[in-house]
Image (tube, rainbow, N blue to C red; front, side, top):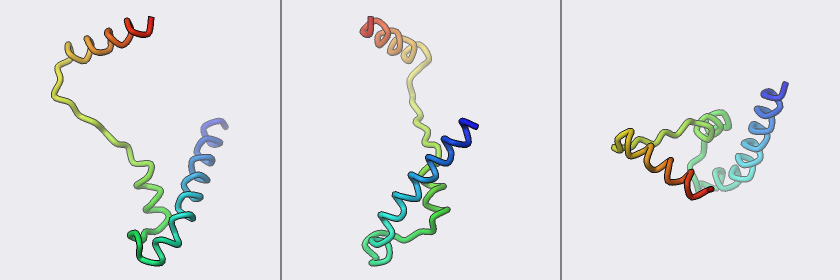
Length: 69
């Protein structure tokens, strides 16, 4: 039930943002798109890739942990 509530909150927030952008889309100031397309793009997972080795990443994480103590 909690997952459903979170999804509904996200959907409501996306709808509010889309509604606030719609006047600008209708005037042609920004590219218009359907709500479902907008929502899919908004919640699309964004991945960041790195060329760092595992050891470099572990060293960075350990440094962060030490700073927090």
